[in-house]
Length: 436
Ligand code: XUL
Ligand code: CO
Image 1 (cartoon, rainbow, N blue to C red):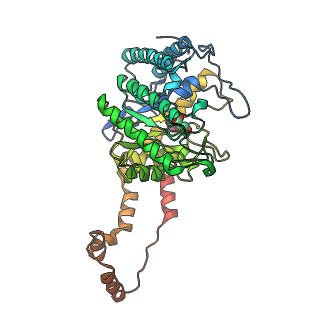
Image 2 (image 1 turned 180 degrees about the vertical axis):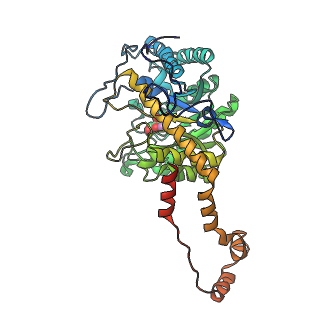
Image 3 (image 1 turned 90 degrees about the vertical axis):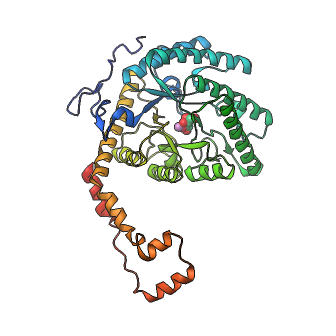
């Protein structure tokens, strides 16, 4: 194994009393919870783009990240030399899965065919490293938002040649994902939206986006790629409005264009916040349609209005996510991918470890707390009781689709005016705090 993090040992579980910051205090990978190990429940993934390619710049200043293994060149050699560094990181942090965009792992060439050629050479290196380490690809994707050619969209660009370029990237990224045994393939519509409606034919752009996704589904069938397709909602940034703005908008789009059988959603916490929703709202919308596939785990900052992609450390947040995941019966193809970056001030390689340790420990605690809440059953019991008027009598008839408006008109006039029970929100909020 390479040694690019010489001062970092393999991170081990040392328990909550340990004062070693380079250890897990709560994430104990082999500990059993409800019949599965923590490792199996949580299926952590690391993002190649944030770990290896994010220099930590912001709109006001250049990057600060120290990356002694990187010579700063957009070359194939430099791309290849990042691969062992990333796998050493995965090994030391004990994360089993990773995710990448095509342009994170390899650069643009002079021509599109040269770009693809370099890309597949790096994919060869990833394949070798995966075999040696046992690490797995959670999902792959194509970066259809950084290059200036995508300034006006990719599949929703007004220019058909740009659409074709994007299709070519997706074909190659799908080939690579298939080869690497990727369990999923994500579409995040980075610039699939508009800056202004003044120059936009929205209906035409949406039709194009659907055609693009159908082509990907058809191609996956052709190459016998069985992984799960995901759409990742986000309302804005970089576009003023993105067509995949939240879970409900994505589901509506997928249904309208007959794509719902082929896609699930990859829900990201900070994107939920930007959409004006809680993460748990987005998860429940996706779950209601049996379409929760994977999670990009991070958080925003209450004081900043943009996608800060911070590491998740908020226990309410991780508990709320794990409550939904446990109720769903866990991931099948998906996982908890840390689509998160360090703050610009945390520029040393060691900070990559502290950041991921914090996220992993926060999710381990979320998992334990959520399991306890579900095992106790008090929330479930309360909610069940709250809706119990639908379990029998007129309620059961309503749910069974057996009554008409006229019948309810007659019924309502006979009964004494309805008495409501308290929703007990504050009592339940106190109860949640008791578990934390
Ligand atoms: C951008 C974002 C992406 C997707 C993959 O906000 O979250 O990194 O996860 O393209
Ligand atoms: Co993401």
